[in-house]
Image (cartoon, rainbow, N blue to C red):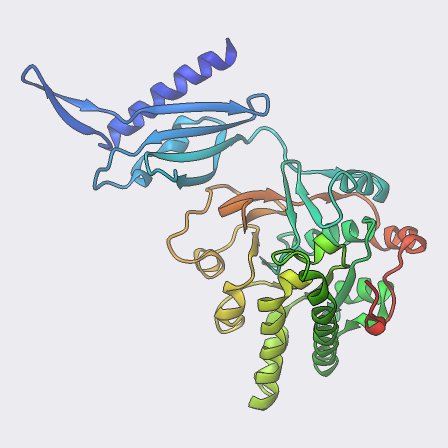
Length: 375
């Protein structure tokens, strides 16, 4: 009865919102002009914590964005909005904002237990979102929670049954460099020349993988590294803007060489299992070349960013869910999972990160020379 009442009242409020925004067709019945409102359908799921709202596309030259849908939804928030494939309905995916989606872990073993419920090539984001490995852009101002978001993803990699070959580039020589050196000094760089050499090493490993996987593709053309159980390689590039600022002072030959190394991984890495993760405060074209940004399939913007930040990350004309984002919370896009920006909330880690790495170290087998050619 509770949700039947909520359903009824919500539809009434939505109909009023359509009337107030003049979102209707005019019809004449028995010499009387009436407003013909769009058909509305509301479908709940996940024990009424989520729902899909279907609003008929009545083909007016009026933007449905003018309708204040959020006002009619009370504590429910619009997560994504899109036009159905047959273009008959606008679909709004909504969720109950009173339900906390953030995962909280008191120990590394709690995180490991949760992570083990997914396959070895999938990472948890929050209670309802998990994503496969992709080239990734992570944007967020200082204090937005992007560093701890990285920690939660890296620690998950360390708990998987397959070895993750992680490379760390940190031109500011900050906390990520400390973590990287704890895991693998030879795969960690802070000086710009060392970072370029690390990129070269990463590309060399990718070229070696290309030769190995070619044999396997003869049995399954459209397969990827995961189908053949190859180890993933992740190059985490923190404070990329700082690196770019120094790189721009170098000669053109050096700049072109670095862009070629980055582009090769971004464009060829998905099938081979080689991924670049770029972390920065803003993703302006002056700091991150457009061709790189557009070819990173997964994009996160954490915290309450400026409109221009969302535009450069996701493109112009993309609707961002309206919400005051808390620490570690923001929006993201990802193939299949979220074609338009969707709200996410990274895990809360209530334990010492370096101590957790020390506890996992006896179980780790990836701190090896990447040129060893291990599969």
